[in-house]
Length: 112
Length: 402
Image 1 (tube, each protein chain N blue to C red):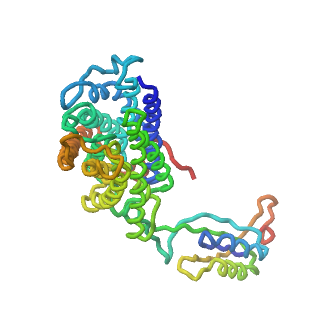
Image 2: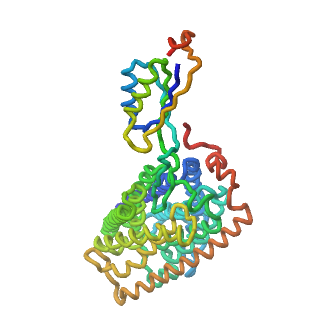
């Protein structure tokens, strides 16, 4: 099992969700986060004074997938979240040691 | 007693109180960081209550009863002698007391913008209370209570001098003596809720109809013309500010357009009883441009953390209107015109004396007040409280729960 953490632009969420759903992956956790990468921040101007906004709003997606769906899931996220610009986001993949379904206690891939 | 006048001033009284609560409170609260929103609301409400009681105890008497050229008398101490049938002109005196009380409430509250995010709450109360009695009350007597500026023929219909010059100058003095917010000028955080600034500015705008229209103290053409010119000046200055930002920074902002609104309102205030619609447009243009550049001048050139631009928007706007109105009394139709033997430049001289004398008195008295307050209770919260935010550190409350 693998654990995907993807940072994407907020307005790309629906497209990513549709693509992930089409792969029959049955869960995703979405969190509103702020951070910086190569896009860095931006400036906002109020009453003529410039303010550096160092952290930009993004969404963090967390998705647990069976090994055989990993490549397709990563491709789906990358293709739908990409606009070809700095700031499109990042995808991280981690090994997932265990997964347990709370309701039944099932473990492993059948819990995903 | 005139019933029509009385009902209009009753209405105007409610409108002006609404300018402070919640108008000004929200206008300022949106401009600070999320962790200080409640402290700003608290400052406005507490000052409103304190000023009301001081007005009852001795403010009204010292401002509006007969005394000498500089201060009124004590005949209305504790509002003694005001009965149900006491009259002030064509309206009950009790109405005149509370209508003027709403002005005494908003003027010290305007200064909140200078000291947000770092001041001690006890210092807020002491400064606001002492300031009301030592600055607002005497200047009100000079201009509206038959004092020396009134005798010279100064024109200040609704408070360009009495409200905006006093509060603007004193705000800058307080900001200077208190010191800047941590990180000023480059490290301070931007306004946390521009939408709230717009809501507050809108309430101020509507309330200003009572502020300027009510200052006619009658339900007549002076009141209606005052409201018309007030609205036109506000709309003009809003567009001016928006266009300057759009050209200069590439984007027209909501904080910008409503800051222009307040600049236009402050600028027309002294002139709202004596200029016509064309004069209002001119004042809106002038107020919008001059206040825009004044913001940058105070913060960047003078390096004073008058955090929410009280001097630049209120003080400079009020002074601009007070000075320029001398040339606009007969500009286009609808103006009050010049009295016999009065010339534009002669009137300008009187207006300038009013602005300069009031600015000097405000400056000197505020220095003394703030210095004594510093001796008594200190001015600033400690660094940790400033970082935590005044809401939690000083008031034990949190504005937003996530």
